[in-house]
Each structure stands twice: as C-alpha cells, then as structure tokens.
Image 1 (cartoon, rainbow, N blue to C red):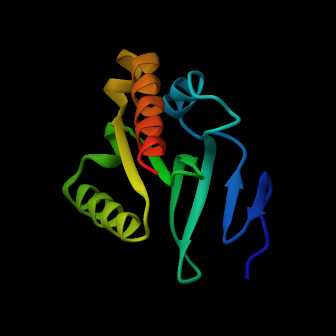
Image 2: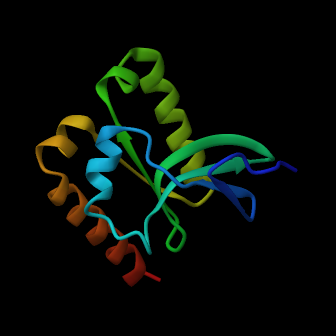
Amino acid sequence: MFAPGPGREVVGDMQTIKVCSSDIEKKLGEFLPDDRFIRQREIFNDGKLLTVADFYVEDPKVVIYCDGFQYHYDKETVIKDRQQDRKLQMMGYTVLRYNGSEIIGNPEACAREIIQFVKILESKK
C-alpha cells in the first residue's frame, strides 16, 4: 500500500490532492461545486497509479481533465491520453476532456456542460 503525501488523503485505493495545479484548472474550479467535484484525484489500476484526474465525481464515476496546449497536443501525449481514456472507460469511468482555450474562453459554460452531463448520467441509473 502507499502512504499519502503532503496535501493528500487516502480514499479507498485513491488519494486526493487538495489543490489545483494549473491556471485552467483553477478557472474551471471556480464554477464547479467543491462538495461534488473532487480536485486532483489519483486513480490506481492494479495498485499502480494510472492517472491524476483534474476533477473527479465519485458517483456516477466521472473523470474530468483540463488539457493545456503545452502538455497535451504533441502526437505522443495525444496517443497516451487516448489510451488512458480507454483504460478508464474499461474501469467504468466516463471521461470528459476540455482544452485550455475552451476553459479560458468560457469557464462557466464548460462547468454548466459538465454539471449537466453528470445529471444526465445520474438520471440513467
């Protein structure tokens, strides 16, 4: 097992990092309710760290990423992100990705869309 690092807590087989790390995450986070959208959630698969979700909803299982251009748009990273998305989907997660331009352009609209998406998933239970 693992021990939580500074600013983290253990939640089942996951850890929560209590702070957002990028400007676009902070911008989007201003419009997502703290009681529902968990920031910086580490997700493990078979005891190995698979990813750190920028935002996470426990039920329904939704993982949200804020993809800045400098880190998520070269060929290798795009392939890695898509492989990760498929792995998360096989684990039962819904994956939503928003690029930095979308978030900076209208963070409130992105948040409304995310909240609506979660409500739709809840209604299908």
